[in-house]
Length: 120
Image (tube, rainbow, N blue to C red; front, top):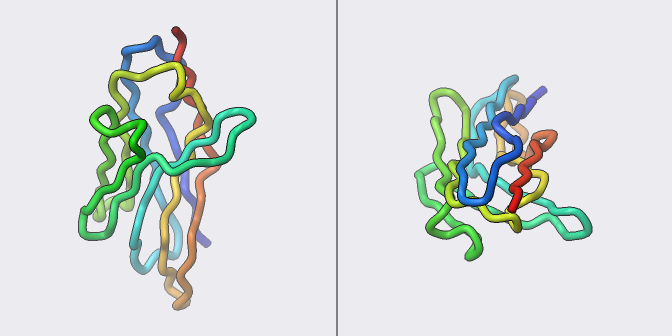
């Protein structure tokens, strides 16, 4: 069984910074892509940033230049550094990982979500 646990959300003023972290644990053989997604009230879940096993990154246009995704393969973690936050960044943020488990299966796993609220 695999579990993803997120941390680091909270309330911040516009222009401020937050760092989200997500750690995977359990019967993990390897982790392919990792990513962060978000869902604001009344909106669909959207991709924020992804990072491949080789370190290639992709960002939503709305966060380019402000957010940075990184991973630590030894610790099975993925972080999202969020700078110059805007009220429109307010959302529930989820981490996701494509994980191969010891039993030979591979699928997406999701965290429970961490709330980010940016006040104007």
